Amino acid sequence: MSELEKLHEAVIEGDWKAAAAATEAAIAAGVAPLLIVTGCLVPAMDEVGRRFECEEYFVPEMLLSARAMKASMAIVRPLLVATGAQPIGRVVIGTVKGDLHDIGKNLVASMLEGGGFEVIDLGADVAPERFIEAAASKNANLVALSALLTVTMTSMKTTIDAFQTAGLRDKVKIMVGGAPVTQQYADSIGADGYGESAGAAVALARKLVAA
Amino acid sequence: MRETSVSSRDRLRTALEHREPDRIPLDFGSTAVTGVHVSCVAALRRYYGLSPGPVKVHEPYQMLGLVEDDLRAAMGLDVTGVFPRKTMFGSSATDWKEWNFRGLDVLVPTDFRIKTEPNGDILIYPEGDETAAPSGRMPMGSAFFDTIVRQPPVDDEKLDPADNLEEFSPISAEDLDHIERSVRAVAASGYGVAASFGGTAFGDIALVPAPFLKNPKGIRDVTEWYISTRTRRGYIHSIFERQCQIGIENLARIHARIGDAVDCVFLCGTDFGTQTSSFCSVATFRELWFPYYKRVNDWVHANTAWKCFKHSCGSVERFFESFIEAGFDIINPVQCSAAGMEPGDLKRKYGSRLVFWGGGVDTQKTLPFGTPGEVREEVLRRCEIFAPGGGFVFNSIHNLQAGTPVENIVAMLDAVHQFNGVSHV
Image (cartoon, rainbow over all chains, first blue to last red; front, side, top):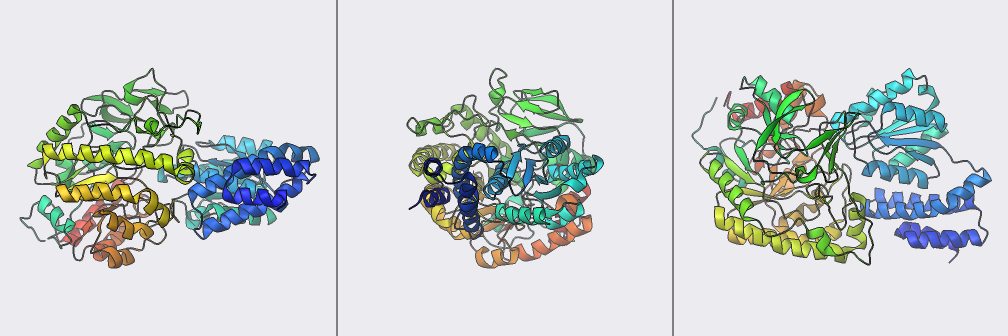
């Protein structure tokens, strides 16, 4: 089994120690950092997403695979930066103002990172101006907003409106998700897309950056 | 218009026995999962012309307001609650003080100790101890507290299940006295009684971070806990095993004091569902949770007349056969908005074996954002589906949330009363 195959398996099995070891071994063997991402981590996380969608995997398994993928990325990322390799998109992600729930947001962030995106995770309870500042300073082309509560869902609209006011609405695509959010709500607040699950969010993000 | 002499308690008991009562019994406020946000309680009191005095926040975590007898009567409710002595933040909810909650005068437990940060966020302290690290935060723009996770570094070599058992101990004399007093206070009311004693939830993710403890040890981070259900099963089993023993012993002590004076016991609020899926497979549920639920429920059924109340949000239809086999009698909140939770299917497949305590109206969309007409239509449709043959207690899908228009809450209540054939209660 090659080091990349071992890494692929480690991510799917959610073994972060094995993932880190396989990554180190692959680099030592001369595998290009970009190939580790595109040829291994991305398809591995796609497979994790597929298993989640068809309910072979559940939240604990997703969290474990995300942890393994991050262990690998922590080693690969500095090397990628050094080579000047570009991600397929830059996403600023966060749970909107007033909302501290972040499990769903963290899963989406991990799936996006594993899907080849550069992810700037602002955490939870993020004010509109912080989304705007991060999107502008990081030159992001995608913003992902999460909310769990009906009382904080309205902060999604406030955030989208703030991008409009700041003159940045045309610079980014904005996607939304979270338990109470629907496609209808996303449309009503002027979002560019709605993801029903972490897997759907990756497919949506790919579509939005390709548009 | 149809009036009857049936008491609320008899009405509830009939419904719990899967016989059709004279009317659908209604519950708002009897538990922390069928409750009403304090702002909604205040609005309802104004709407019904009741004394506007500050409402008691009996559960600060979700900012639930106490539904007093006068409001219960005005809303036409049938169930009252017996609550634990201490709140989610570990302070006693027995003595009260005034607090202005972002413009609304309320009463909070005397040991409710907070600090407002410069950005408007409110921090709350466990056991009212301001020298401890805060255990909850209510961000500006929210109306609820959320737990601040205080997770010591996890060293698998040193993990000891006893660290996750600090909150599970033999019930104190003070708690027993409180429960007995509370039960006596409601016993003669004529209302059905739902009791919450605590201690038998097994991994309720709201309780894992232990916002009621000053220095929680063990696994307290939400992500780490979920991961542990996969990678540290032996550790989790050890916690559940001991918790189960203590929980049953405590239920025995409680029953020795109050007998069958309560109708049902809210035993478990562990959520197994998400909006579109579940947190684990049925196989995992049966391996990790089922044995403990079954032991608790078997004890209850063998020794008391209490009905066993299980709460789980989300898409959980796949677990219903296991819930039934484990001995749960009642399922709440019946989140019909989640995947695979179509009300007609649920009633047809499980209606003779599980009481649906909830499912009356959606609180993610219809109730907070719909029109009174849309609320009314949904409520009537749900009543038509769930009411036949009993086994239905009307409640919205989870607590009435902050920001819900009072007109919609009243439209919901009026629709149930219309279905019940009563113009006013």
